[in-house]
Length: 142
Image (spheres, rainbow, N blue to C red):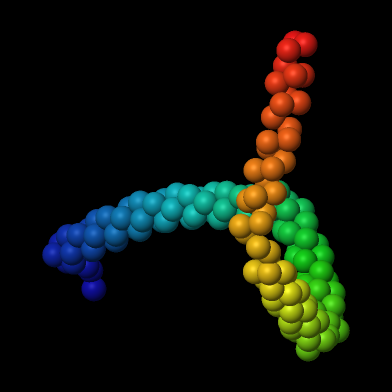
């Protein structure tokens, strides 16, 4: 059995389709290779950026955490001090101070009210009358 001419043409057509398919697969493989290279380059760039940021920011982050620990220790100290304060005693002392001030103010007002303003004005006039001639006499020597 000899292959017929139609079989040869059919095989040639199949071979051309296979070659075209192989060429398309080769182009696709090249594109895929280029995309893989681009992806790898992007991954390396991102990795480098992350490493750079970590190396740059890590000391700052550590310093911030140390500051935060110091602040927290200070807050704990202040909280302990505030909890040990005798607020009731302080309020009692303030109350005593207000009551004492109120009593002193009341006594002062009684003394001020006891002053005879008319007599005070007369005394001031008399003092003025006594000092005025001395002031005129002293002004003569200027």
